[in-house]
Length: 291
Image (cartoon, helix red, strand yellow):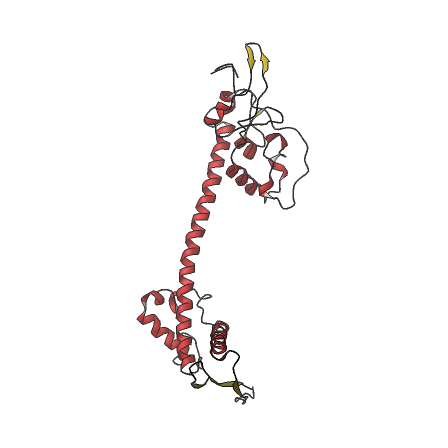
């Protein structure tokens, strides 16, 4: 480079990617352990096609390799001695310099062109509006913006979905709690949408939705068909949580004291045995209780 020389220092020629042969990298890449010095990097095309964009993003997040404390050597030119000037880092964020080879590189062109562009100084490398370098810079911007847009949408959707799931679960928990406290049955003969006998669980849940707009906004008909949190398996999971909570509270009541237990195991109409357990104990206040 011969233009814009200051204090006998210059950016120097933009070098080509080292011609070190590297086998195709198909194993899982550790994105935190990518080579920083441009001279140590394998060609971008050596990475597996499914991993290239992840590698590109990782390098763009790390930003260009710009060592400022390195003492670059002086080289003899016809116009005098020249060496790489770190002041160019402040002007060109894509500019890199290898401390191993003491050559200048372009991060954007490495990521999207497989090389650093044309030989010569910065003006020859940057070129016209539609040059290889400018196209590579634009692709880097698109890749980063795409990532940010995707992450923003995922975060937004995740937050909204978390709120919706919380209200759906709250509705189901409130309905089941009422039924458990009053020893009432849960399902009906037919729990489909057009059924007139959906069962107490869905009827009470509908009543809760009608009287609580926050819950009603996300439950039953306003929920996704595969995420209503009303399935029998979901109900059983919530009941198990209630059972564990009740058991813990009972254990806290009588701790290591004496208690009596009555177990009964009658059979229902399908000849399936259903066990019921009653605990009789004296609480901390000396009151006899049965649970």
